[in-house]
Amino acid sequence: MVARQHRRQVVDLGRRAGGGRFRIPGPGYGFMHLLNSGKTGSGKSSTATKLIGSLAGRADIVLTGDDHKAGMELLPWSSRFTETATTLAHTEDLLGRLVDQVDARGQTILEHGHEQGRTIRTWESWMGPRLVHVVDEGAELTYSKTAVELLDSLAARGRALGVHLIVSTQYALTADFPTTLLLNLTGRICHRMGTAAQYATALAVDQGELRDHGFEPIPEGERYQGVCYVNGIPGMADLSRCRTDLVSDAAIDRRAAATAHLRWSPEHVFDTRRSAGAAVELEAETAGDRQGSRRPEATTESPTPAQPAASVLFGGLTS
Image 1 (cartoon, rainbow, N blue to C red):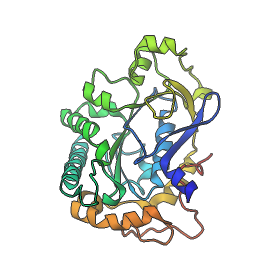
Image 2: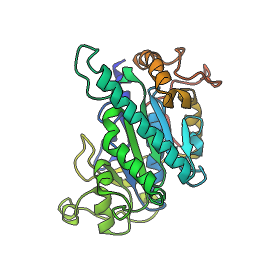
Image 3: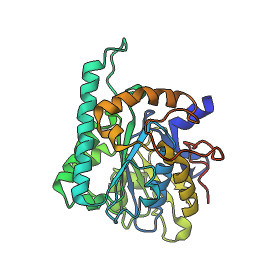
């Protein structure tokens, strides 16, 4: 039980330079909004995949996404994601409903935060699932002022209410995204970029700080895929150099199949009353074994007896 609880508390992504694992706190245990940056071929997508695969194994997490490449990037996870927007209009609608969730959750805490015999100021597991929204390419959202404003609202208010963001992008976005949005994407993972200025922007530091930490640009080439600098991650030194484990397509497919039964239906996520009603099931499921217990969503898919329970650490996802 202790080992399982530890796996719920961390997301394992790879290795640190100099030894040790590259781990970040999981949702409910200090997970921060993340900005995942890097040029094409840098390993940015592998980092996003590792994040998704780890979170997919938790029954108390709802996954939604934005993927404007016709849904192709997040397609392998379609059986686990509650909803994926593939157009700007769909993105505006989905982000709007997530903002509505933040508003409803704030009202829930306001009305019921004292009923447990203590003052509650942040979202807790018994109240309902945690929502993680994955943006495949942040720059695509900048074509919509509405989408950017909604994303900014989620970044400013969502974390305390159990709504988290993972935003991936090829470029530093200071010219495109509001300063408040960038300030609230506090966890930074930066793969290979083109210039020192882009590294500095992606890591939320100035170039002087890069020099002070002995920064060296990440070279091009396949052998450097997944190499990244990390900043703003609790428990890790500023500007730590790490490497995300690379993952094969076959491993992704296996992981998606093993976690498909943990998908939340849209009705349970966006219907506040049904979501609250499912919280009792959720609390039982997160406290004990998932195998054989009732799930928040009645689904036609179920884990086969031959499949092991999904590991939150994503350790089973190997090439």
